[in-house]
Length: 337
Image (cartoon, rainbow, N blue to C red; front, side, top):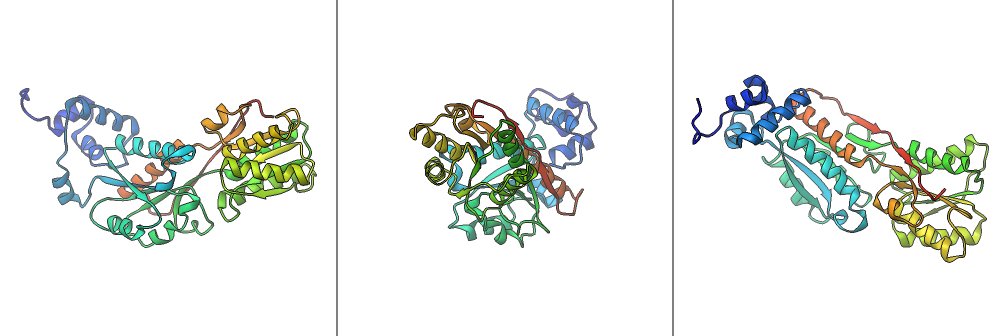
């Protein structure tokens, strides 16, 4: 019997979780080839018993650090763009914690990339989940030669394809659903406000918009590009209202859509009576807009969680081929159509 003063052992954890000692060991070593329900029981038992693994000894035995880097763009940690990092970060870290791994947050400011690479190539982490953004799309080029496994959240460029592992959302399908919602509402003079033209999600959303119009036998609608911001959305909407007669706008982000709605209103129009608007992202911005925006939901937290799962499989050696996952988007219907 273990005395109250004695430190809990791995065997104590295994007994409390109702699993074998070997299973408990695999879970607490961060191996991914364990049933998630059993892994959760082991983690719960370890926390209840206040069990602490000897990380240094484990690293010497297995060459594993027990830590995983989560790299995020520094520019996206504040302001309204936060959900695009916060939600995937939450998904990734929750999954890593559940498998007994310690997430290490690394910031990419676009300036000290060399320092970031030196850390990743040193004996600090077993792999990395990298949350990409259009402002940091060159980062993956410098990560290409890393010896540790890397899984990306998002796919900013077509270059990130053949030999890279990533989790993305269905930008193309989401754009078609957004356009279809406008068409089914009886709108026929559609325009789109798109993000930066070189950003892959933008080109996929634009392709979906144009293909859905073509499927309905309609000519391509006008396109205006801008940054993903409210001012850019307002400026783009002003251009569209001046040069074309539009009765619907597909805005490629919630922020662009809010800017467009405000411009329609300032020009004397009403949403959705005069102009319907559908957005993309379905963040809190869409839900709190006036009127609340119909928006395509990106499964951001799920993307982070799936990326962490893939990475743990790569670390455990249960998969060796690049894993490329596209998660479905869904349309949240509100009052802007």
